[in-house]
Length: 139
Image (cartoon, rainbow, N blue to C red; front, side):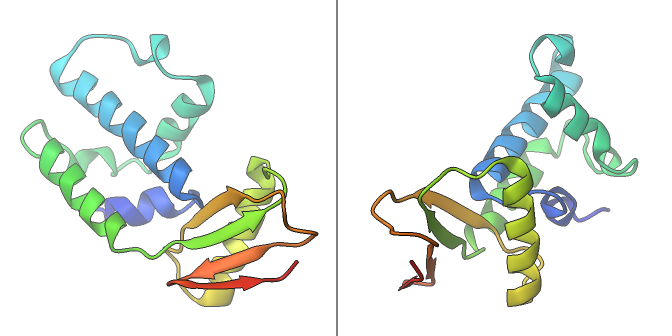
C-alpha cells in the first residue's frame, strides 16, 4: 500500500492546499465508488491535473469499504504535523510557495513540513516565522 500522505505531500506545501487537495480527492473517490457524476463537471482543470498526476498505484489502495477509514487516518496524521507559520506582507503565488516550501523542508530536514502562510501588512519587509509556539520577526 502506498503511503497516501507522503504521495500527497510530494508537491503540496501549504496547510491550505493540503486541505483543498484532501477535499477534492475524497470527493472524487466518493463519486467513483458511490455516484455516477462526471468529475469534469465539478473539478477545475488544475484539480483534475493534480488528480491525474498521482502515481498509478495510488488509487489501488482505495476501495469503497475503506475510504472513510483512510481519510480519518490521514486527518489524524496531518493533525500531528507541526506547521511552520510564515507571516508575509503579500500573498505568494504557487511557484513562490513551492520554492519556499522546498527550501523549508530541506533546511529543517522535515520532508512532511507544511507551511501555514498568513498575511501581516504591519511587517516592514521580509517575514516572521512561527514554529512550535516561538515567533521570530525577521522584518
